Every structure is written in structure tokens, then in C-alpha cells.
Image (cartoon, rainbow, N blue to C red; front, side):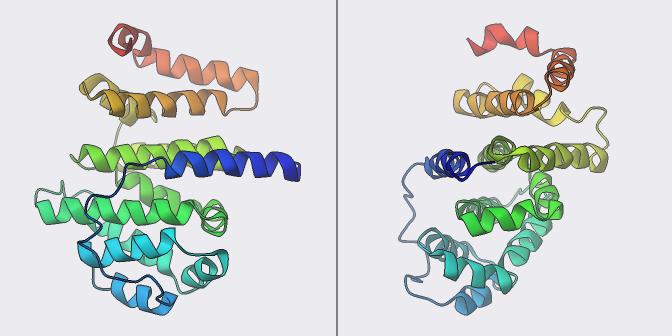
Length: 236
């Protein structure tokens, strides 16, 4: 890939990842504006919404050097471990649901950094763990996770491969019959329009992210086999 094309893709991905609404709970967070990565690491070891919200803000405002230090100190591993603990609980407690949502937002902030994104692309385990956060009743969490998977699949062939691998992994762990069941089950069950838009973006990037036309056709037929065409009137 040429430098110009890579830069263009990175710009498009960054725009996709930063197009979130303003944070109404900005006052409910630790003040970490000029904090060093080590402090954020310590706070991540005490999983509270206040701490995670503060870390998210610091991640969003960090430069590449700061982000590299955060990653070298296993910051992303701590986030993924927390996400793994919360995944599958059903998040019946409001505190757990908020913590899971804030944790995913921290991962999103890491992905919004070039250093963070390439760190994730080099390790399929992170994306597999991220996909397990779909095992929740919290629609906001699922929406963010699907957005991140779509962004990865859109970025480059490796990202597309990792997103597909994560869906395959989710299928195996949750004993589903098809790798796209989690996407299509959500589409069939929801009337939430913004969520439907995100889910359809996942379908589109999975299909059109495949470089080979025969693979695209095969992927399209997989979705059609899961009753995608029957959903089209609902999506209009």
C-alpha cells in the first residue's frame, strides 16, 4: 500500500472512530490531563467508571509517544482483562454495564491512535476478546463493539481478517451455528435505527472488504442464507 493511500485510509478510520456524541458525564471522571502512563496503569487496576472515564480522556488527548509507553506498560492488556471479566455476566448491575461501556470506550480511544491500532492489528487475541463483549444485553456496548469491528475490517486486509476471525471465535465460544449469526440475530431482533445502521455497516464492510470477487459473492450468499433479504423492507 502506498504512503498516500495508507494516510487516506487512516484519516477515514479516524473520522469513523471519533464521530461519537459529546460526553455528558465528563465531570464524573478522574482529572488526568497531564498524567504519565504509569498513573493511568495504576488506575486501571482499580476498575471504576470514574477511573476508566479519566483514562479514556487521557487516551483521547495523548500523543504517539505517550500511547506507545501506555501500550508497553500493558495498558491494553489491562483493558482487555477487565472486558473479559465483564463479558458474559449479562451486566444486570447498572455499575457493571457502565463499567463495560467505559472500558470499550477506552479500547476505542486506543484504536483511534495509529500506534494503538497497529498494536491491535499485530495480535488477534485482542480482537477476539473484544468480540466477547458482544455477549451482553447492553445495546450501547454491542453497538460500540460492532463499530470497532467494522472499522478494523475497513482499514486493511489484516483488519478484515481479524474481524472475521473474531466473529468465528465468538461463534465457537457461544456455540452458534454460523459465524454471522451474532450480526443477523441482532438485526432481526432490534428496532433501534442507529443500531441497525451500525449492523448494516458491519455487513457491508465484511462483504466489500474481501479483495477477491468470488469471496465477496460467497460472503453475500452467507448473509442471504441468514435471511438478510427478508430484512430489507424493515431497513428502508
